[in-house]
Picture 1 (cartoon, rainbow, N blue to C red):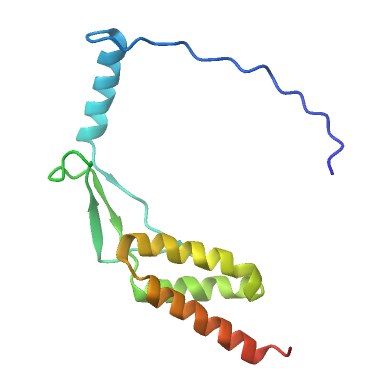
Picture 2 (picture 1 turned 120 degrees about the vertical axis):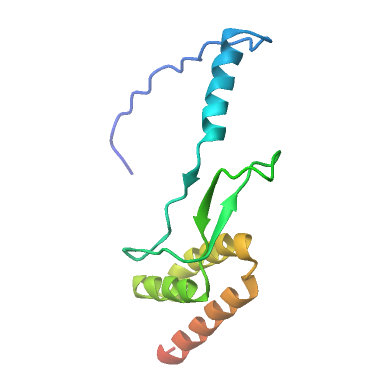
Length: 136
């Protein structure tokens, strides 16, 4: 338990803007939107351990209202990268401590590529391997 005394300043609301048609707020917002829409970004590649992982397989990012316009691209991890990620977290503790992390990574990866079954199978195998090594 902390013995510190915290002094939190009073909240200050930002200015309420109207965003009426042809207003200065709308013009500024549309200018920013057009700049962002015209720019292409490359999502930084993932890190596994302390190594940057660039794969040859990339996917493009499109706005929901214009599937023909490319906003950028990102690197897609494959089976090899998933295996490396699992190996990278194994030294960090017992199964019960790293399982939430592994499950989060599996969910994030499968939302892109739909590999839930394979990743959960790898996690299951690792649990069985650790149970066989550790005395009860």
